[in-house]
Length: 119
Image 1: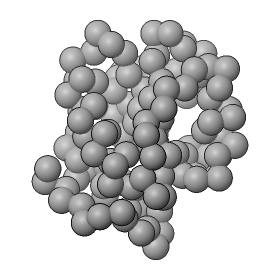
Image 2: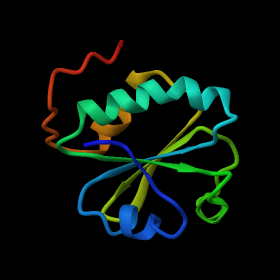
Image 3: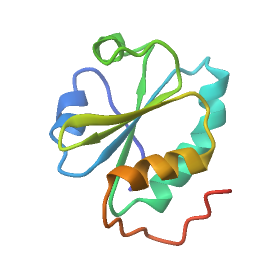
């Protein structure tokens, strides 16, 4: 599943009402660590495409949701299950950190392909 961009007005529909787990990447275009994390987010979206929805929200353009979820630094990645935030990872982390976070919360995950967390 491709990564989609969400905005304040579509967040509820795209994330909270989603029947799939949703990984939300809070970012901004000027943020260097956000740009460093982007390839990791792309890999996760590809590796988990059959079981996970991945969305990005630009915090500069969408301050309402960023404020609502207490985003104080970016990148911040949040995992939502059944409309509820279940985990948060802050900073430009290694892929293995996100893989471990996902695997901790999404039971019986059927990955699309073998994931190399050291990519």
